[in-house]
Length: 619
Figure 1 (spheres, rainbow, N blue to C red):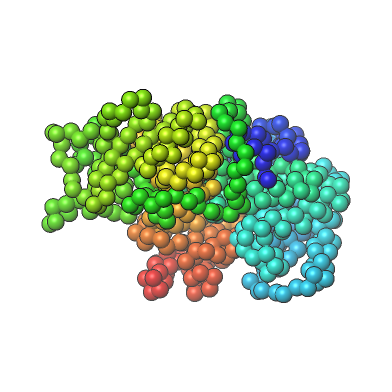
Figure 2: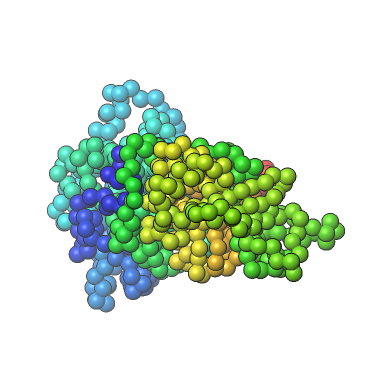
């Protein structure tokens, strides 16, 4: 088991590792980092951006280091920072070049290497290895890696073993596949060498653009480290999360889930925006999912015998009630209580068709609208599913009750407060065939409380569908990050048949609900974008191009489009994308369909138009 207690917060025990003068792990606060997107050879621009990131509140700053020449430039950057009275620890981001890593290790505080390309090749070939051949390849890896460890020991330099889902080596892919297990095994090969070499200044990261893969890989790694007596700190992040609302939802879904589990010692929110903008979002995530807050929740029950798969997606079995539960996608409920439905339906994803004189549902239309009580002064359209409150005549009724007559199907709902769970609650629910609305608004740790609820439901064999309800005071970034982390954690573990957000802004709540479901791959309702945050390797305006591509393709529901600054994570991280726009040199772009190159060396000025032509041709 990857954690000792699934139902109450307990921080994963890790060792303390110093990155310069700022330690991570053990009882240290969760540290925050970002990465420059300047050309590292441009000392002044890089130093200025490092200072901006430091002023925003980052603990560490990472820089791309492509060559030995770039690594040597780190000395000038350190000296200029010291002259300006800044001593923030720097991290060299290394791909493909052990030589650059060895130079950087003698100059700055930490070196990040990628197991997928540090020693192994990536040619997208399937290779069958005998056990002896495989062991020989691991021995070659050791020969490449140990010299770096020796330099790091000499200079007190830390190392991050940074594994990316999209850049696993051919050797790992051939044996373990494109899986969380493959990520774990790639990482453990390096960690075993560190352990045998008595090198302990190690941090690990397991990143993916899919939050679920990222969650399962980190959990599996922690479990594996426990088995082998390791306790290295973990750095968390969702790669290529994108920008705006989607980028924040994806990042919080992955990072928040693991912080709730007690996993994570440093984080980065990777956004396709100015790196300075990553820091406020990261700060909010660490505050929302802080140990201090999560520790307040104590389970009212002693849970035992609860069995589930924590390392792969398995949906909780629930009974089908119309369009809710069973194998249906999770539903979205919008709260229009006290509002004129005709005036608010456009905020819930409906469009009025004047010819048919009725409202038409878009892909982002709420499945149900909660009106509390129908106001005789308002006109209620026929086709949206309206939920109303029932004034129950039952004595000592512990639940709020609702009903909806929709699509020739009558739906009944009972609401239960997650902060007031007791044995009697489950005895009553066992007798009910209603859809359960689990209100998570008033409990200290909604995820732990919901886990307790589902464990007790399993004990009573309660299979009713469950809708998660959350109340917001306002629909701001704090609310977005909080709900994305909490609901993302529950959907990642297969729980839940819908979302009901009340309070705040109706339109923003609707977008947030569908955004969370899309990020967790529970319900695809719009175009999926995989875009990297950019770094010194990026040779075009990533933020501008991403915005342009989004504007032109936002209507293509279900299509996955990757926008990548370079090929380091490009082809790998965009492996499940339908189309890719990848930087290939100064002013040149390569366009992909799936993993296949369709057009090379496209001039940047024409590349977006060429991508659109490609999509039109094949989609």
